[in-house]
Length: 431
Image 1: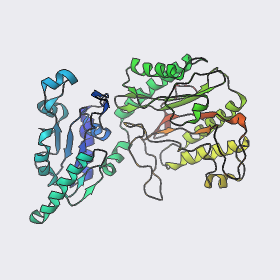
Image 2: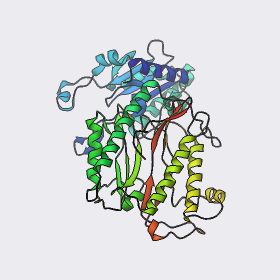
Image 3: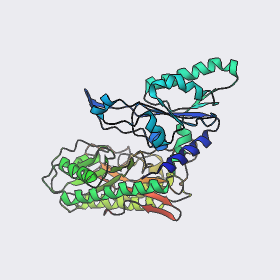
Image 4: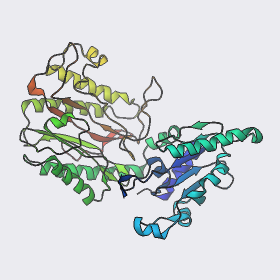
């Protein structure tokens, strides 16, 4: 659980970072599944990170230079008629008490009140996202203040993306966040264990998916962190396969990429294993190759190493292994520089993990230099080999014998950067 004191600390860090600026964050919209049926609501991650507030139609403003109010919330007022249908809202009065805002206004007063706070800053921090209507609203307020600037000599003269001030703060996880990630990964591990027990020839991929997602909820998770991938046979060569409708057969590999969301924090695990419990010789060779590359890559996740090092180590291991299997040939350096391995391995080896599955934060310091791992970063490590039935080798590389085709293997773990190196949070599920 994230305590109110931690949300307060996050806000203080943000306001210190923006200095003389003003930052604005918009809640996620309520999405419609079809007609008048709505999806389960999920708050926008930046908004939630700073407030813990989980309702739509809200705006938060941070104005560190305002004399009275630095943390300002705009929320929907209570409406008992609507609440009979859609659930209770906290309302204006209680939001101030529960979330610790300096002041809370009804959302319909946003246009009236917002300029009072914007004028206190020298720039506006706001991420121009998918809400085009709200983007235009912010730009309009900014343009009006620019037009009146000569009369005042103060106000925001620039509009900057809030991602660049907030997301570096999100990259380093607190102890409370790590505890949430531990719980999300613990439940994810148990769901994968249940899937492995349940799988057998003749069952359908969706039956395995049902067992996994049932386990997420049974153990207290919020549900799936992303659409579960349960990919048997040739489907294992499709990176984001989610149809999950094939009947599994003896001799198939089954690739499961599934993670649980717990308190907005996410697990992300992939395991690949034979449906009937026995690898074919070719499946075993590819599996061992991917596993070796993954273990080598995990060793590179530690403080001071740059973000590209674990990917580069994985690629080196995969290329050497593919050469041994005569699926690639030639000088390893030339293969890597020419990306001749990409028909087999076409994605990066990992991503940040946290409130978002592909979590906030830059992977590079600038165009030339990669980010450096810090204690408290959490990253996935997920190399793979995918030999599609339709694979076409790069010019000058060997033709692929049919007995390799249709084999897809990915192995993914969630790794925390610690002072002494790293900790694999998903260690509880066998490889």
